[in-house]
Length: 177
Ligand SMILES: Cc1cc2nc3c(=O)[nH]c(=O)nc-3n(C[C@H](O)[C@H](O)[C@H](O)COP(=O)(O)O)c2cc1C
Image (tube, rainbow, N blue to C red; front, top):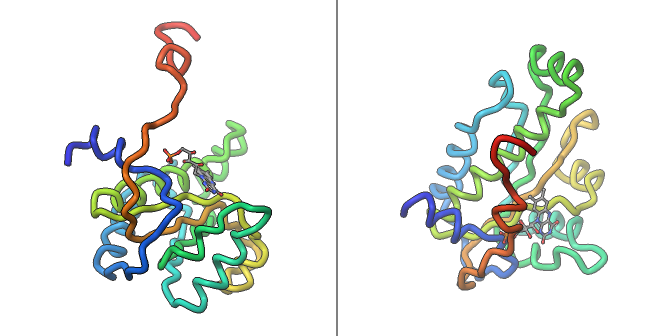
C-alpha cells in the first residue's frame, strides 16, 4: 500500500471483532514504533502490551468512564506507553528550550505503531482519557513514571471514514504565519 493511502485508511477504530491478534503482528507494530525518531535519540518510552484477557479487561475498565472509551472492552489488545526518563541531553534541552520533547517523542512513536497496524490490516485507537493512577498500579509501573497514552489494537470490519480536518489554507501557510 502506498503511504498516502495508508494514512487515509488509518483511523481511530472504536469497534473490534472477537478475533485475537497474532503475536507476530504485534511484534511488527512494536518494531516499527521502536524505529521512531526521538529528540537526541533518547527513546523515552516503554510499550507494555496487555493481551492477557483478564488483565486487559481490567485495563479497559480504567479507560471507560463518563461515556468515554467503552469500546476498549472489545479490543483484544491494549498497549500502555510508559514515559521513560530522557537522556541528559534531551532533559537539559527540554528545560532550556521549554519544550516537552519526551511527549512529542511518544506521540510520534504511537503514530508509527498505529500506521504499522493499519498496514497489517489492524485497527487502533490512541487513548488519552484513562485513570493513569489505576493503570500504573495494575501494570506495576513505577510511581515515578507517567503513562501518557494507551493504544487499543484489534481486528475490525469498519469501513474507512472520510477524514474531517481543517482546510489546507487554515492548516498551512507559505513564507509567513
Ligand atoms: C493524544 C490523543 C488522545 C486521544 N484520546 C482518545 C480517547 O481517549 N478516546 C477516543 O475515542 N479517541 C481518542 N483519540 C482519537 C482522536 O479522537 C482521533 O484521532 C481524532 O478524532 C481523528 O480521527 P481519526 O483518528 O479517526 O482520523 C485520541 C487521539 C490522540 C492523538
